[in-house]
Image 1 (cartoon, chains in turn green, brown, yellow, red):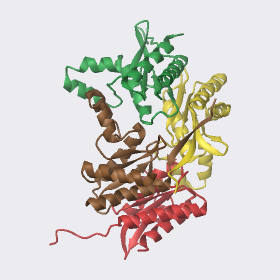
Image 2 (cartoon, each protein chain N blue to C red):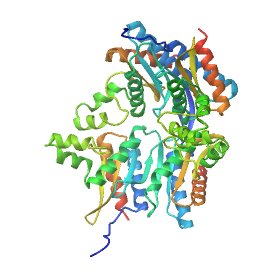
Image 3 (cartoon, rainbow over the protein chains, first blue to last red):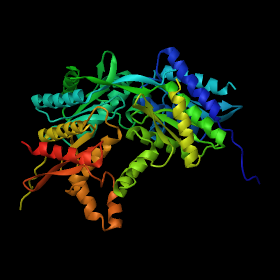
Amino acid sequence: MPVSVTRRIISAEAAFRAVEAAVARGRERGVAVVAAAVDIGGDLVACLRADGAFAASISIARDKAYTAAVFGASTDGLSNALKDNPVLHHGIAIRPGVVLFGGGLPIVEDGAVIGAVGVSGGSEDDDRECARAGVAAALAA
Amino acid sequence: MPVSVTRRIISAEAAFRAVEAAVARGRERGVAVVAAAVDIGGDLVACLRADGAFAASISIARDKAYTAAVFGASTDGLSNALKDNPVLHHGIAIRPGVVLFGGGLPIVEDGAVIGAVGVSGGSEDDDRECARAGVAAALAA
Amino acid sequence: MPVSVTRRIISAEAAFRAVEAAVARGRERGVAVVAAAVDIGGDLVACLRADGAFAASISIARDKAYTAAVFGASTDGLSNALKDNPVLHHGIAIRPGVVLFGGGLPIVEDGAVIGAVGVSGGSEDDDRECARAGVAAALAA
Amino acid sequence: MPVSVTRRIISAEAAFRAVEAAVARGRERGVAVVAAAVDIGGDLVACLRADGAFAASISIARDKAYTAAVFGASTDGLSNALKDNPVLHHGIAIRPGVVLFGGGLPIVEDGAVIGAVGVSGGSEDDDRECARAGVAAALAA
């Protein structure tokens, strides 16, 4: 019986590329965002806050990434999966660190979640698009 | 490759004027309020509690100012912007330090948010009007 | 009667350079560190965790940077300034977010504190040296 | 048997004078301080942060005022009274909101504690002197 199992975890380099790309995509869209990249335990690997981003976005970006990582789903997808069960939706929504609106995406390599990206600072659509840019950059080895 | 960016931050004098004017406006309206003024990071610069104001208002005033500063919008405006998206509204409403009812206003100088004023202790309309008086006093150089 | 005062704040680019350089210096020394860069209010601007760094280092790095920023002194310098006054030293040491051992350095531009770097993950000497590399990179415009 | 007792509590006006005078005294001494004035329950009545004061001082000033008010003694006097009993000193020192170094002074009117002033931002001597100026201003009706 094996003593250990092997898990893939996002590398520092990939996390760094992710947050840089997410912030750059925000700049292209005219919004100052915060981007966070976390590992599969939801712990921070990289973070970057654009000049002028509102301070509220620091913890929201991290919490979106945390949520996507520890549930293995996008924040939108998780919210959607819970939407027909209001008690469950609320019960998950109020847990510490959970965010159930758009802008958190898991990073999936060969079918395995290796971490997540969270973005905050623009509209939900801005944040989603920046998070997608972050995931793409993380996977562009 | 810039080392620093320059930001305007509300001065101590302007913050002091703001909380004094907000409390005075409350007195004119017959309500004892707490007024708080914060910088762009949401940290307190000045605070004043009228004689007889309820103790609950101390932290509510500060949180309204914090919310307006870190989101760069009035607490009413932020609530309004989120009102068609219940998941987003609830998700923001439950974050620590966030208040989504009236009485928090950003202080904007030449288009830049330099801080915010929050007032609590009266009706929502009282608090809004006192916050407006605070912002006006802050900007009356 | 000024409405605002002007403060320099570390730019996102400089913060990004700082955490990248601090982690790279750790790699040269054979240690996996976490580096954090914060603004003058102690709020995170950039963070990077090396592959294999211990999870404990995430919050320690951030707290070292926070301490150096909000007291405007290195964590070593602050500790040293307090060392002849045990009550004061202990009283500061137990405050939330404060770290009084080596590895937190303010970033000073033209005499003004614009932010700080904190590093955790190696020995105190490793962390100090990585933080120095981070500050140097931040200022290398 | 009486239903209530009467307590004197620092007025908003006196608290406002106190924080203004304490910050002004700091300016004369060349230090940027935060001053807080609280009621006999330790709750904030007025606060003012000088331009350029380090962010760490906001909560320290409030905690010094809180300590002086809720123990009815200066932070120095309280620390001194506990100094021969290390277990007690430590046990008090680590309670939330307690500060046992200089800069917190009760405001006493006709023998009754009506509130307190706390100052942080300079050396302990700066903070003590600014707190004294604050108390004097509060009592100068």
